[in-house]
Length: 230
Image (cartoon, rainbow, N blue to C red; front, side):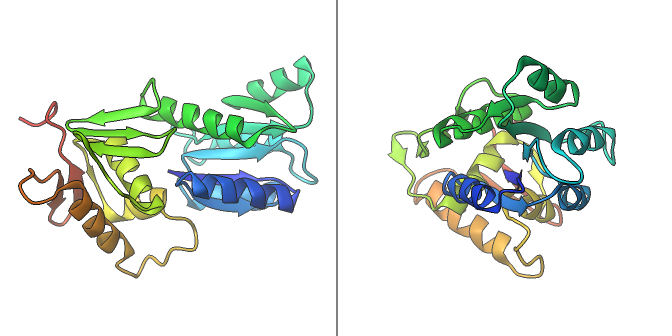
């Protein structure tokens, strides 16, 4: 999943970014509202962690503009981060379109839990554990299994499998994976997606096991979901 962290305190934004990257997310950073809106206009973020108080375009205005376009039917989730802790401030943030509100200073563990909660909501899931067929992915503890076998995945492979499992049974294109699993520094002209899918496929399916990740020629990849397959 791809997240934009927006905060004019650059050290804090970078610290949040480092922590969320360790959780396996693709992270972009922005240090002001104008840059955040520009990035959101060209990237399909799954979540934006947005500081409320910034010079120029503040977090409330950024949130309102995100809800108004360019695709108001499918705006990203917004987690508002702010030192303002009055009830009126929280109401203003939620009324502007924020999905959740976290008061500074906060423990990173709580931020990570709220991020997981919002992304589960986006994927229509109710717990931090995803199941597709024999696959189980615990997003809170970062454990992946196929049956009783624990999968030894890199952070990027874990993020890729999480995206596949959130879209089990659906064909996802290479472009979609690049947009949601990699950050803005990824080179779209390399074969990084194909290579990472290949290494994930070899770890998910070993000799004697049924293949679970299917290549759909000309369209992308699909994680086979036995509940959805004819």
